[in-house]
Image (cartoon, rainbow, N blue to C red; front, top):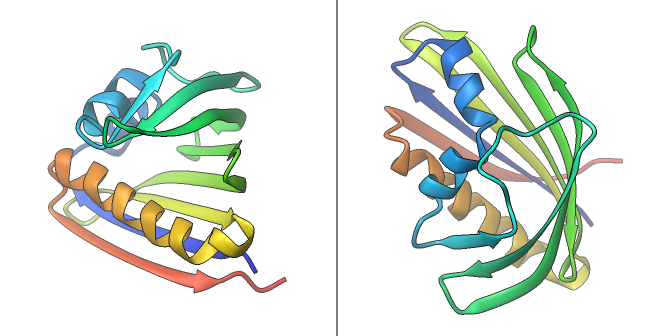
Amino acid sequence: MAKRVVVEATYPADADRLFRGALSFREMKDAMKGVATYNGLPDDEAEEGATYRVRTKIWGWLDVGEHEMFVEEINFAKRFVQSRERNPAVRRWDHALTVARGEDGAVWRDEIVIDAGWRTVGAAEFARRVYLSRHRRRKAMQIQSRIVEVVA
C-alpha cells in the first residue's frame, strides 16, 4: 500500500521568491549536497511538460539507477508544482510542492505519494528524512513531517 509523506517548512521569505527557488534544480542540488547527486540534471528551472532522466547516487556510493521525473504541472498563480517520478526501486513517487503565504513569511509544503512495493515503508521514511534534510539546509525556521497511509 502506498504511503504519503508530508513535510512542511516555514521560511522568513517572500512566498513568490521562495517558490521561484523551489523550481531551481541548481538550488535543489545545493540543498542535497552530501545526501544525493544527480548526474545529468541541468542547473535550469524545472519546465512544465519536461521529462528529466538522471543517474542518482545516495551518499556518494549507493547508485539507485536512472530516476525519471516528469513535471506534470507548474502553476505560478497557485505556487504549485506536480511531478510524477520513478526509478528501478520505486514505481511511484508523486511529488506535489506548494508554497503559501504564512504569518511569518512562507510555508513550503512537500507532499509525496510513494509506492515501492515491499520497500514502501523504508522508501517513505527515506523520503521523509531527505526532505527534512533539504529544509534544514535551506535554513527553515520550523519543520514538521509525517507519514500516513494513502486511502484509495
